[in-house]
Amino acid sequence: SAVVVCFVCLITPLLLYKCYYFGDPFSPLLEKWVAAPDKITLNFHTSLQRFKESKLPFPINLLLPSSANYFTSVLGVGGLVLIASTLFVQKYKAEVIVSLSCIVLIILLGQRTARFFIEPYVWLLPCFMLCYKDNVSGKVVYYAAQLQFIALLPIWFLSIYFIGKGIISDAGRDKVMIAMAVGYAEAKWIDSKLPADAVIATTIRSRSLLPRKYYPIEYLHAYQRDTATADKLFREMKVDYVVMSENEYPSFRSRYTDDTVATHTFYKATRNPMNRAKYNLAIYRVKK
Image (tube, rainbow, N blue to C red; front, side, top):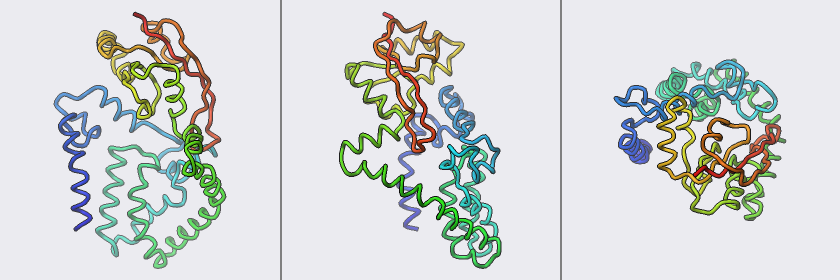
């Protein structure tokens, strides 16, 4: 009961915030049923649901990666715990029903990728560990998980080695963030090229790392045919610069930008070094 009270106290402010600003306490999940749905929030919800890290169909994408580059984006054998939960429903009825209800809601309203199923997986894991010996299928899953654990140990040690540098010094933290935090290196570069009060429009995804005002590029997607609305918002924000890849949104750049201030080559920040890719980013001055 104490856990429930703590959970309610933590989640209530967030629900009230979303309800006040979006008219939907579970935004963006229920946006399509709001009286006056926000087009940007609807697009955000759609993009979340459609996003895929694997080319394999659900639920196989929870167990197997579509390529070696994405082995860190699956539950692997651990995903079988979600399926094996039906084996101990009689013994842990409440826990299994709540977890399975969460899984159903994720399938219907959320993103069908492994990361979204980690929470019910963590809930069901203790139940599985307490009763896997009662069933042959449970034993098979258990020993397969042990083999997977052993196979992944070298990768975990390497990860600890590379990420651990970030807790030793500021310079080490900087190197880890540049290598693994999307948008961090780009934000530092922008800060070195532009005044602190400059307002930008950018396609950089991790804008929480940008300590400045920015024009949400999502409005470009939402108002592709309604350029007047997009233009109005752009001017109201008093955007000074546009920051995006040199091959992105040519019509947008021709409409808003003037000369190029600076360009730089970046490597995509990722926890999996096999997914690193090179790309160019440019800063354009806005037409006056």
